[in-house]
Length: 382
Image (tube, rainbow, N blue to C red; front, side, top):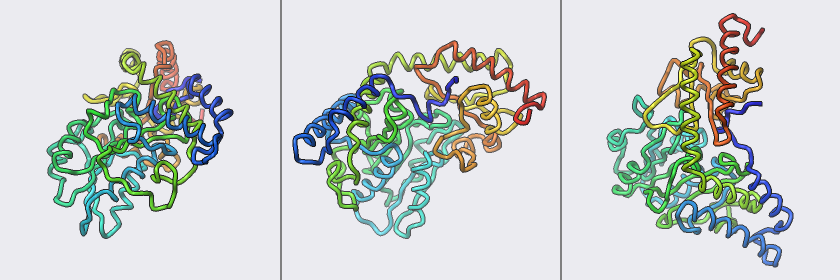
């Protein structure tokens, strides 16, 4: 099967899988246990934390391990809310294009009497304009959460510029970097963010593992659920084998970040060029600020989920948006903001350093067959 859904998840790298197996077999102790077996697991845990911190150019004490991107996002907002100074009503700012974990959590917070949330839409390019953000800030604004790269369109937000503004105004800034980590160069010692979210299975590590960066200047208080895990930040026994494999995957992608970015750019350009050459009726959503790993497309024929099923019929894996919202029949919010009338006809192709030029040529050949079937009315029920 041809796979073009790397934004949903990635296969574990051989090295990460080998590390997982080795640690699971030989360092199975609970790192919170006081005996030597627990101590050995604790040592692996802290070595992994240090390795990831070094790749991000930050201190190991700033890294908290979680079960994935969703937990990291929720933990970030909760941590920053507890760190914010007391006030009658706290004001938060986010966007309508956020991952569902942030968007729906912010919606629930907006129902509380002591919290107000503003949702920004972005400009015609899907980017949050600095002046728009400035106008949205109120005297009681305490947190802003804006993703780094959108998982459906690949649109990148100017997190450095946003962070600089918020730093000047003493407002906490969280950014969901699940889709950008390992693809775009980021150095946390130079980036003005207070919290940043990462996920293992997006960068060839195991599922069920993630990390949250919390800047050392953020005053942290223990999780409301009494726990001794991760310095009291979260409940639940730490997944040491998964974290060790995560650290191995991080090291691999960071070492090859520059070459992988160039490869992704070439793959994306080849795909878009071949679509045009073969007159395939998929319109790529191209913008000035995009991560090359993701290409969202619309068409003028049928709904995106039917297009996806046709590709699946031909042994090709693509998606109609974030895997976290599939099954709910939702039009991707990031598409609704940009193309209100095209959301139902949206499909996403996402690439990897594993994607070859031959893969793209095969994808184009299959796309020609699919849209010929669609034109002739043979698709879906044919």
